[in-house]
Length: 84
View: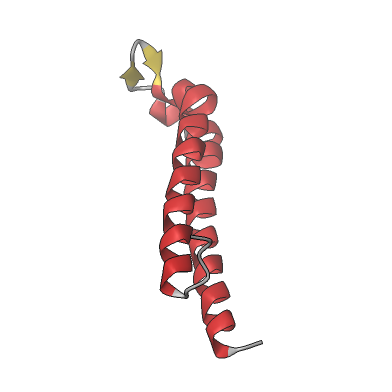
């Protein structure tokens, strides 16, 4: 494996680690462990913990997909492995 490939995959794994940590925090911590604490606040009439468990984690996951695509397109161009 070349030095360029190793750098590419290190950055890719860093992106994955950060994005999966965000998803874990939102879905597991906010939606399950901290739900009782967050239920003191409301979004559109629903307790915040309930919202994270049922809607928020899905919205955040979809947003993270778009962020990952954006970051990977930038990374591919930087390392000249883009498809276009």
